[in-house]
Image (cartoon, rainbow, N blue to C red; front, side):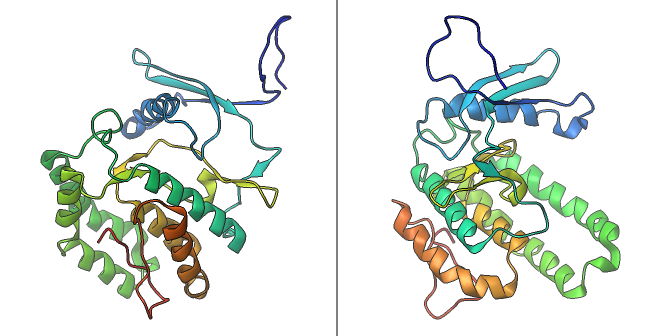
Length: 263
């Protein structure tokens, strides 16, 4: 519970959430706190967003520590415990939030200049080379927990033109938008009330990207084949209705997979 000095005025929250960088953070993730602070600092100028209200976002480059102070949403929202998937209703409101986010920044002239780091050919090559180099250790780590058919999918994607085509789009900022980068129930605060809205949290991996990535990650992690068949068509229709830009479209006659207007 927050307390304030005498004379404090304005809409003062009674509960706050404080997020500080851990001192034992792995060096590879040392910059994630800075990246999230940069997002909240930029979001302060962007108006209405599906995020908690942020009161302070600071990063100390000398120590590499970061601090965020936002609304505490626990009375109005909750995080769904993994591996329980979100309900159908929560899937719908979550996808509405993603559609609003992606549509708002679709082709925004600030992307890569005032907002986010623009993809460069060098950065794209580095990401692709790292992915290819680490794939064998990924397979070794999972062992036979990764089925042969699943392994074949990874190999087929890595061996295709997908990575180069995606990089070319992002370098040119063609049909790009702002993405969260890690949409799963652990990073989403779901509303307790029927009329409540979703709040996306943990913005460390935000980036300029293709909106389909956020949706595909959510679906792959939380939706079974049966749930995809049930929700894909109505959710894809909701996306086109709630977004002012053609972020996604469904392919007539198909309910087992989604294609996007970004492909």
